[in-house]
Image (cartoon, rainbow, N blue to C red):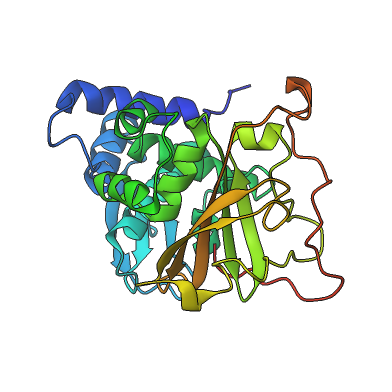
Length: 306
């Protein structure tokens, strides 16, 4: 039985080739996914290559991987040409290249991906979308380079993460999620809309101390009424920073850095916390169903766009 390639291995294979070709020179980033997709697939999968990468009308989808029509060989990667953000387009292309490398044999007719598929990296979301995002992050934002931009012990602002997003030509959320993978700090990323959390992601050190929000399989969680996620009147040019006492966002005091995203129609809140001792051991690091203090009794889930 053939072992399916992991997203980390697939991204690392391509990263090694790009490092050999460009080193750390000015042409190394951002990755030109369209060129990489065509060249790599033609070299390693000449009987089944990617022959087309372009924008097209894709209502309700950010991108898709499509089998070539009868009489032609290979695959096409399309992105929604209504998208204007270069970072969103680039990550979409990386995501679809991940589907090509990891999933095309499982889905011989191709795949279409919704906007939320691009920003949910947690394993609780659809497995294939999670894998495509892990691949795209590894290809576009190699951790060794990211660490050179922001040290694992540093406390970045949203502007700092935005600088990385520009370097790799990805969205701010993609850059923030990548930083959370390696930071030594306790931090939580919260994405909310209309006063409710859509989803969140915690750093490993935050997760160990119980600083997270469990959003799957439960009623929607209301954001604190004093948070910047609700108090948009406190934002300046859609951004702001606000310290909070304990038991506002989390059990511990935190600093909220928030950005209202017109592009995605939601608010991004990055919560920075001080150091704290773990509340459980390494064998219990998986999220537990214990953090529901803000969960309302009624309401409907608001999740259309991640």
